[in-house]
Length: 306
View 1: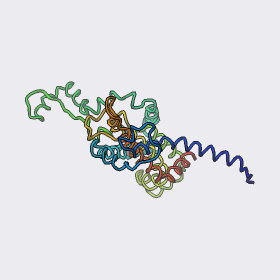
View 2: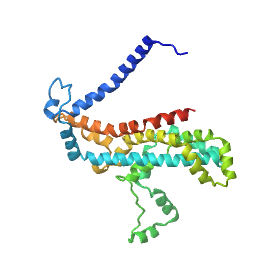
View 3: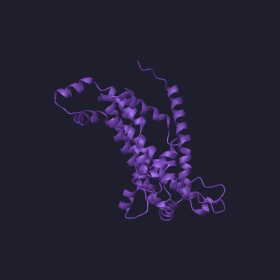
View 4: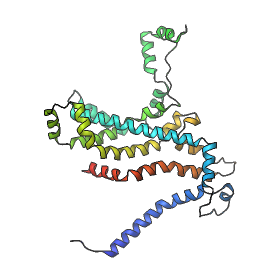
């Protein structure tokens, strides 16, 4: 029996509208400021209605601040982190769920414990590893006196070590971030809900482990992969600390880091119109991803809850 409660429905809708207004009001002011000119920004109080300078401000930030390249870098990094995390996590979850090998549970709990170590905690050793990838080989060369071999490879008589620097490179921005304990845990929990009869039927039909993974588990995990991929894409797009440390070249910086470069100097004219314009453009790709894949996102969350 459905009970009609028009008063309660009205109150609930008013609360939802109020919450939507509180969320959208700052975004509206960002949009309005991004459409103003330099002179209009200096007017007190500032206009609350949009102007006609949006595309002029956009052209300015794309030309002078290399913001177009930074948007491309953000897309490459976010996509690379998303694909890398999904690929490694689903394979790791498949291994710890369906394979019986020594210390299997220990390996899983070590992965799970890494949830307590965010990138801010391990930022120094992570940066050292990315800034000198060949450091373990150099340590081994010191232990086993292989410096002469490295000298002959380098074509010099002096003692040299291997140097592999990933600063200001896409691998340096992506590879240290692609391990995800959260994604591994979520995929493992989903694989545990898959009926054992499917695995038994696949084994009877002569399917190899990767065939079972590719033909059965991947199609069943599609909604979960998309939902988790959206979350990982947003996290990769909004990364600030790691790109800030790994990039010294403005051409390799990301859009989120590039926003800081657009902050008006203390002794200069306020350029909030350019900063707000860039902030709005930076918010558009994640918003479009959520809008386009919203149905799959909700479906993935519901399936994960089951």
